[in-house]
Image (tube, rainbow, N blue to C red):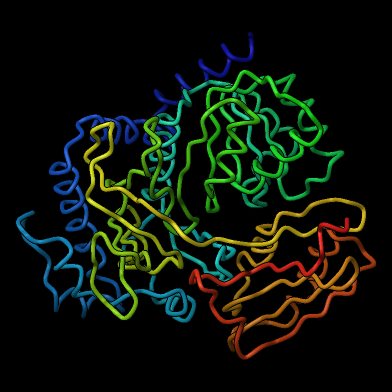
Amino acid sequence: MFRDLVSKLTYSLLELFPGHYGRAFSLFREKKRLYELKSRQELIKYQKKSLISLLKLHSKNVIYSGIIKKTGIPSDENFDLYSYLSGFPILTKEFVQTNFEALKTTGATGVFINSSGGSTGTPVNFWQDRVYSENSLATTYLSDSIQLWRPGCREARLWGAPKDIRQIEGLRGRFFLYLKNQLWLDSFNMGPGRMQYYHDLLEKFRPEVLISYASSIFLFAQYLKEARIKPDYGLRSIISSAETLYPNMRGLIEEVFGVKVFNRYGSREVGNMASECEMHDGMHLHMYDHIIETIPAGKEANEFGKEGELAVTCLTNYSMPVIRYKIGDTGLITGRECRCKSGALMLEKLYGRTSDSIFTKDKNIIHGEYFTHIFYGMKGIREFQFVQRDYENYEIRLLVSKDYDRQCESVIREECARVLGGNINLEIKYADAIEPLSASGKRRFTISMLDKTKG
């Protein structure tokens, strides 16, 4: 296929080019070398060296300079990693929101702002830089490669993040997709008619790898099964991302598509943190990019083998100290070795990122994640919750700070009307608190009160 040859040539040229992609491919080779070494000792040594380099730059940060001076910067790798990190305070989303400008580290270059819409209902902005961006791309390449992706292979994405979608719009975007051999399908608006259209496109495109939000590929699999359609796309693997993949979801997806599902875990704030290999025996932590701790309830220190809130130290962000950042998810990390003999620590369980899909009157299905993206980059929104009461009546509950500008309401209404229809009744409420935590420890950031069984 001519397009396949063009794409493979494109990736080969990108790897040779001394720019963003060339540096990312070079980092990818280094991370792959560490992955194939299967040595935990080497991985931990790499983490320590990276942490020391990071702290030397962050010692210039206004907020962290005193903390780093107090803890001291180790002179070599002969220190206990988790004991040392316990001397740093937990970094919360609320602290980042309040101190965003002051968290920018002096001397960082190639700095830009990235925004998390808040998959847990708490949106937040982050300073990031060129080094972070290249490392993040390299780790994505590594993650995809252990999940049967190869540079230039036909790749379909059932995706919807507006920040990502904007990169593929217009003539330039379509040319970019052609060169990279990718087909993108919008996962934020999936009614039966649209899913039939997606099936037809996938049959024609014949992707080797399909990357999707967990709930989107599950919804698509449900549609295909109910329509008695047996897809034959030529898939090697399905990569599930952005949400919790539950066993019943995995089972149905694999039954319908006839290939294995690979799970991965990442975020806008810190990138790809863990990925499942061909053993499907849990997710390997990407230890060359992060140090991840589990902090049990009421504790401040890491405890292996116990469920707790995940605290992430990002080793590749030189523009902002992301040290022991509570990302809003809970999980279980162990030192158990995967059956592939990888040296990486294992993310055994992951809880959270739950949301309802929104069903419109004309039978479209709006992915709950869509509503998190509305709040990208909006200052002053601490938490949010979107509620569907029926087909016409909706409510958004906002917990805001003094930095919030009420003129944002017009943008919120416009974005909601764009996918729900112009005749909806949307009430925006300002709350002192959002719905209490569920038993799983997560807030539901989108709630539908419809009885879907009655259509």
